Image 1 (cartoon, rainbow, N blue to C red):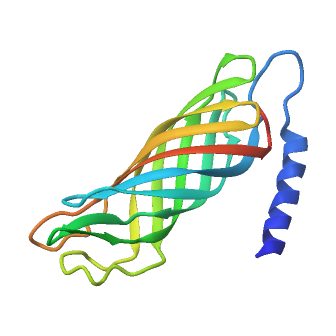
Image 2: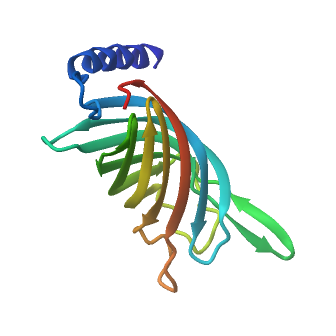
Length: 193
């Protein structure tokens, strides 16, 4: 695992050296990679939201002559929920690997400051099992649509967005889907703005 991370780090530094922009006009570098961490507030239909930390890695690269980027990431997220059980609050954890795939447009609003709205699908795999809940499908896969906006200042990143789950985890009686509000802060070790 550590060898794979070290190799990925070396490749990103090499790619960054090839893709870095130069000249007097400030444009985004064409490749970025870094770490992200923050908070999610995940909720399921008919259940209460669960606030939990999240973290992972993300990268994006320019895919057009204009500053349109394709971004991919992999992070840990708890996509669980809370509910009231006879006066007590119960928590159901769904520790997941979350993988978004987004397109974004990077808008230069000040020196080294970019705003980038983004949208695209996400996929997640639950590392735990929520089969104890009678009315929830125990499938570990989830998918949906991500939308949000990021802000980048130099190597620092800030993202705020929402993941709308499209998979129905409910039984035939009612629909149960996920919804996750997220806020992350990050640092790009490859590519600055």
